[in-house]
Image 1 (cartoon, rainbow, N blue to C red):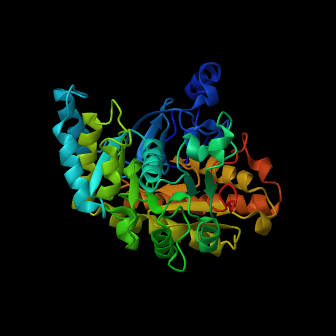
Image 2 (image 1 turned 90 degrees about the vertical axis):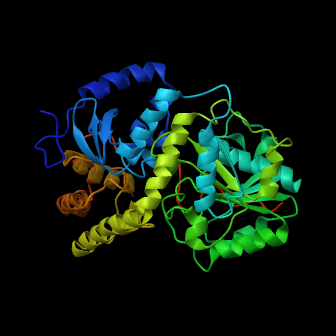
Length: 446
């Protein structure tokens, strides 16, 4: 019998997952299309590798095992799997067609809706991915300012201007690498030291997990304005999640350009660029940014239905309330057990669980792997995050906290024995490509 969302006597059987993975090893470089979904982020030998279907907050792998999911497709599912209102909108549009020879009315309808809810969205353009949109924002910034350099903070996709400053920058000419530099979040001095007369834009995620301190975003806005540099918010995670209008609404700080994807269409592929009309007007002729599938109607129908539901149901408030229960509950359990080397932090709608090597004397990746392993045994697909959706019910929260009460004592015992690896039934998770602080390198002042 496949495992269920509950305590299972055995770890899930993943025979079909492993069979598919064996084929993928030969055919697909890195075996995954999305790094965060790849096998390196899950304990090998225990975690499933392929999901077949989902509904609400639950998924079923190819072997039929059921899980309560807190990864939620790495962010896009703000409402949940197979959310009826969104799926109906997609089905209704599918009856009429997907992509057409001329523009579709949804391009206008969705733009009007976005303009109503997103601050400073004087103009709107669509594409398919977040990387498309952030790259378009950088190109626009360079065209508008007549400058070349970019300062960035966070993760901004796979395109050359950004990946050039990471450790995966093979194939990118050095001349491009010399135009992008990084700064540290909440370190306003690192921005002051780096910004110059050739800085076209400062692009950052308004937050990842750390909260802005000392009016960091407001100070950033002022510095950019004074320097004639455009401020770009990469709102792939914050948009339509921390508030319907994203971080600009939540923090009361207007960016010159704002980039959205993920939560806006509940799983359908769409990227949205918004911003000042004088900047965006360069897209008329001066800056080329056109794609065959930019006006693809199924994703636009999904976006319209999703945004309307986010507004009608006040979804951001729900995500925060449910996420806070998990964050506070986890920390309470850890404190009761005097496990001061693990905590849950971040904004309530999306939190991260971390493990401190100095306080525990153990390998954080092994500790994470052990918790993941035991959560999977209890029917919870867990990668160290709580990516909240509107489908995460009170029962889901209650069950998850019960699972933490069962699992954390196992971790405590392993840590006390200073041999976490002994408890693992497979290979531990690998280091993530993305960091949450001190991302990449300190900026170069030149």
